[in-house]
Length: 152
Ligand SMILES: [Zn+2]
Image: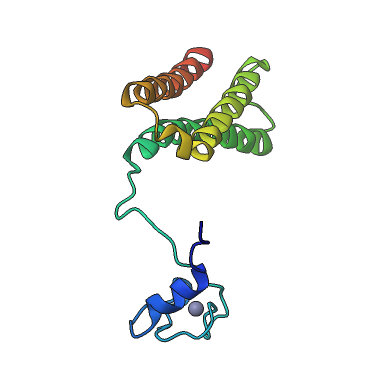
């Protein structure tokens, strides 16, 4: 079995006689003699890439959690501002604060897991991903409803 051709040589062959922009500084690296951009000094590699990466499902999962997180964090900042301005919390006991901090932690971890594990989740069956997406939407809407119920 022979070794695959050196990827640096493939890169140099690819840019030989071809106008190609450095992905970092957009300098034309045509006829490059080493795999380093002469303008910005960035090391370059040749690799495969999907023409149009599918990110719709990724965003559909991030959206509800980001909206719920934004709402809760805004409410927490408003409560903190009220405390600093008037010396008074918006609520009487710690239940609301504990609930909000718990929801922020849960939503943050879920968002991070969804984004960081996306390369694995994207190859799941669509039905499996749909169940997870539904769970994220329910968790996000449920978080906001729970806060209104406790504060209201
Ligand atoms: Zn460059």
